[in-house]
Image 1 (cartoon, one colour):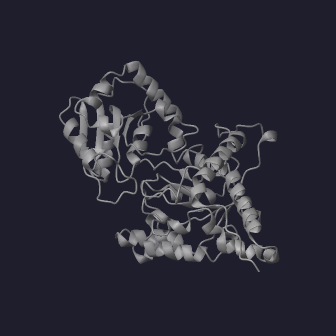
Image 2 (cartoon, one colour):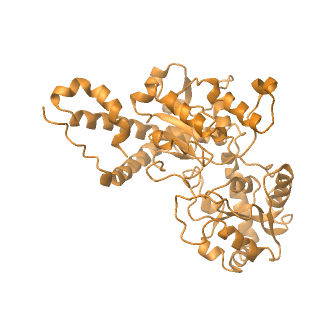
Image 3 (tube, helix red, strand yellow):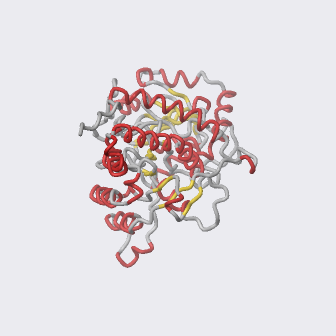
Length: 431
């Protein structure tokens, strides 16, 4: 019997395949999922909602992770662990999605339909609190999941994971890279692990109170505001930044801005008092500086958006959420790092912008702010599910295409083994 033919899916063709799939996804999702996620079609013309099955994970992977996280910080005792609540922090998207999928008040306004029968599901959500978990627990979860029938069936390609913390699933990401990953950016992920074609960029949860007043410049006395760590953590970045790596960008910006008139830059770590000061500063400033942090994105960008403080983004490799519905050129100012660290460049640029333009930026920020508010019933959570839903045609294409290629590559006498052969090779084919 001749050996199985080699697959034509060589690594050199992978980039071309992604490009074709991206075009397919664009044209397909443009027609299936219009840019306005709130009732874009009359009821009779709306496409069916994707059906999503939520794994009933062992408790140690959900609330047990919360218990362990809080216990390690002395926040709860063993007696009160069963009543522990998810801690409020910038990675709480995983809690918002978990709570939304377990709502008891109906899901008429949601872009996805939760089903109890996995056989009827289009997508499978893994409700693991990865941002609170330790590496050992992440490895244990993947071992559990790899033993599940519906994971093995398509190599996880129709599964959805949230990994918002840069270190969430970091050690096991190669074992879940076929899945749809919900991440805040690609700062610590290699191109073979994640891409805009199959994955979804999430906003961080804002940590300060939204600004409730009207647009205007009169009460925004400061030109530019920044509060955060002056130096970045020493981490090995997977993206090579050509200039001023690590904390040098922030340090340089501090040096050139701290003596500027009407500019407020403060060093400060996360704390209740810091959030109070940041709220006051963002609500009283025209612009808020967003330099790259430990990763290209950070929660202060979304703090600025809900504060109607125009973000000034100095982060060359940033990826932003929901760019099919949010034109960030209308709500933020982008400055490359080479120019941003030139003395006087930033403040000169900002001072030239007219009050009329500032008001226009603020109006645009106010119009899109709901996309960055997890608590809004028509806000972030619904938009995340719309984004996930838009991946479904591509997921089905990849699954069906892979099955066809597997069948083609098998000798005729081995056709009866297609299913088992497929399960063994699915994860290795498109890498």
